[in-house]
Image (tube, rainbow, N blue to C red):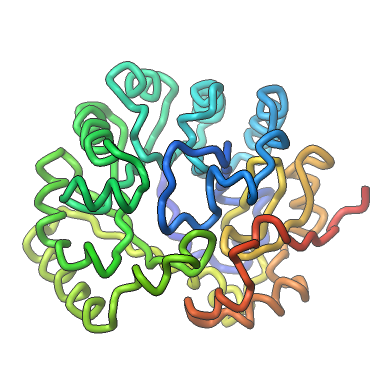
Length: 337
């Protein structure tokens, strides 16, 4: 399957799509960690109604909807996806349809047996959270003793399979300086790919933002360190995720079509993981119905445009009072029930 360069897609190419190119599905908001930067406050019963999460039967319904719109790839997110009992079934059915299935995990439950089941289910890519080369620092940041050892174990196991692996590192003022040593360490585990994004003032990240955000000087040195790594290890992949990119690209290129459709653990369909807006729920209408009913041009919706225009920097996320975004979420009724 040919890789798609999303930045080179023209409006007419997006216009011809029958569904989203990519899907992001939070299969649960339960989590066995308590990460300081968690943007959706996973495992917080004050932020989530766990009894309202999709049942296994409803997951089967959603899986068929996903297969019907034929996305190029999808990401299984959370929460911690490995806490979902029907995870292997979800991965297997979607991967057999030809869609690349990716997943993010803290790795805590991934032992030899679990990894083999992921391989057999057809998982294409797995991202494991690892924020430091120092066990005590990673465990504190992730809120779980043994988190470091579990992540390292998972990476070692998966490096021997055909699953593409990467680590996820969130640069903070406490770990950003160790990036060169960090790269050497994960390479020793068989991992040649790291994905990073800045800490955001959202969820628990809002509470810890001042304590964790690196200084401008630290970020500058970090950029230099990344460039040195690219020279030292030409085959090593460093990916920096900009949470603002899809927002300002939609605004400044006048693009109304979305690249990713977000589905939350209760079936709500969101516009962006970073914006407190939903358009409906898969319990009421299918993905295809929402797509044809207005989601196909959701970035042209006046409410979405208004909110997007208010977000120009990471600091602007504070305006949305995102500590409670998962509770107080605006719903745009693009389909009438």
